[in-house]
Picture: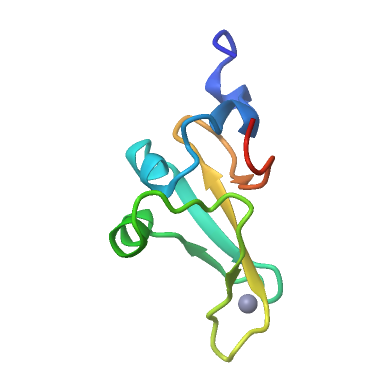
Length: 98
Ligand SMILES: [Zn+2]
C-alpha cells in the first residue's frame, strides 16, 4: 500500500493498528456516529470513551442506542476519517480482523 497516496487508501489499508479507541485517538481519527433511524449525526468524543470505558474499547462492527430526544428507537453506527483520508469509512469489516 505504500506507493499510493493516502487519499486512495481503503479502509482495509487504514485499519491495521486501529482496533481500539485508544489507537484511533492517538492517530487523530475523526469518528462520527449516525442513527440509522432519525439520521442524527454526532461527533464521537474518543477521549471521553477512553476516559470512562478504557482505551481498548472497539467501535468496529458496533451499534449504539440512539439518545436523540424525543426518544428514538434507532441505533447508531460509526464512521471514521483517518488523517489524510478524504472520506469517512463505516467501521465495518472482518471481525476479528485478519
Ligand atoms: Zn435516532
